Image 1: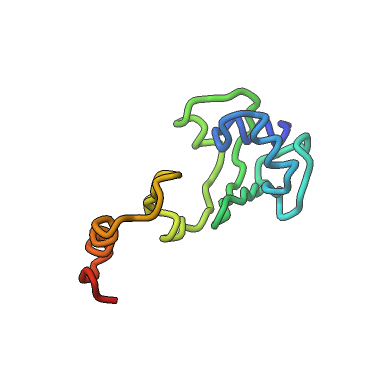
Image 2: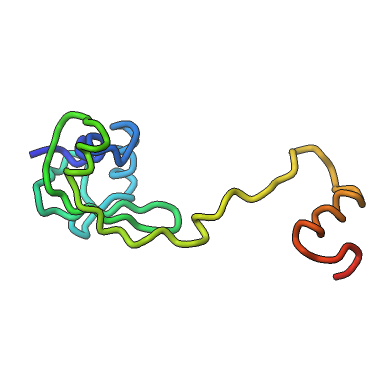
Length: 123
């Protein structure tokens, strides 16, 4: 039997054990559909649900481990039942202007419109 936060960290779903602990305490991780505490025990057959912004990942526990292992070994400890990541999350980051750069100049606006695919000056 292994603690939930330790298992999440051991199979590399979280970078640190404290990050796993905070996620479980914050209600972002569920065990068999119900919220639990970080010290709750995990056994093979349990379903762990991890909420991320925009989507949910589901994992079925196949093996409990207490020590962090390499990625190839970690993948054998669970079965990923997650739906595919939504398209809008796969897109790259949105372009932003530097803070304090002020309003775009006329030249900047024309370049932005060209990038968007509009004819400059036409709306």
